[in-house]
Amino acid sequence: MDDFLVLDARADRAAVLRDPRLSSSPDTSVPANLLFMDGEEHRRLREVVKEVIALTEPLPAEVGAGIEEIVTTLADQTEFDLVADFGRPVAALVAAAVLGAGPFDDRFLAALSKTTANLNVWSGEASPAGDVAALRVAMFFLKAPASEGGGLALLRRACAEGRISEDELMVTPVMLAHAAYENSMNFLAVAGLGLVTSPGTCPAEVRGLVQEIAPTRYAARRATAGCAVAGRTLAPGDKVAIPLGDGLAFGLGRHACPGARVAVAEGEIALRALSKVLDGGCRVGEVSWKEHPVFHGLAKAVVTRTS
Image (cartoon, rainbow, N blue to C red; front, side):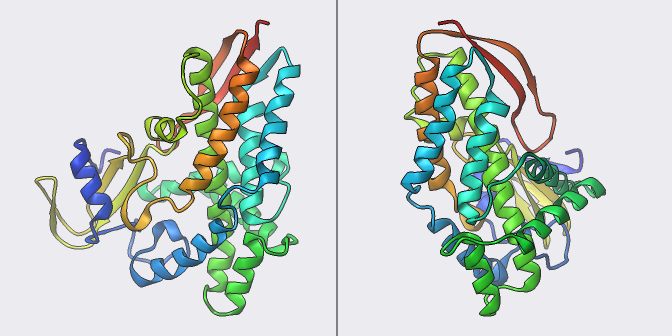
């Protein structure tokens, strides 16, 4: 982050997230990725993405039941990993529900996580592994059967109607799946660790936990023209990093997370079920953290039930 202006004050961060003078794209190209789009093109694609997410709002009963089934099975295990056995399968289930495709196997999920490397575009670093992984995920969605009435089917229909481009049809399912999977997996595992280490934590206060944990550490913006931000003068091309703590985990403004309600509902069900599994006592063994500069999450957190 050496070449970024990193904002500290919450008021400055909130203002920049809403500031139309700062672009969400790391360069001047016109991308097909919603995360890096601005203006009318961004509004057009975001409306379609919101329609996709609305298909799982409120979270369907069968998805909630699936989450509870995944977590309840942990009660039969003396030892389990909050990442591999809790966060990952729950997040994968919900990501598949959002797209109306799947289920996703371990190989697919590994490729999906590797697409995280594509955020290196903000630092100007090449990410060949991330590009290959993103292509594999995109090809999966191009060939996958889509459930009638599901998100992938909606995106294909939107493309046929001319509402989104073929490039956007390739990229958008990857973006949606990654956001639904990686962020949720990271949040659930970290929040689960909080339940273990602080037994008084209330799983019902999931929105507060999300805002505190902020599974995405930063948002990034680029000045498109000379402007003043937080008392600093930016030249065209200067980059700003916005830490997403202090109640900003879902962002603000045009790029606020459209899946916030799904994420909160998912977390409430999963953490409530996990708290029942942990009732009676447990202890934490091996814990290791991911090292990605943007995504905050656990690599492993082994829990042993003591009763």
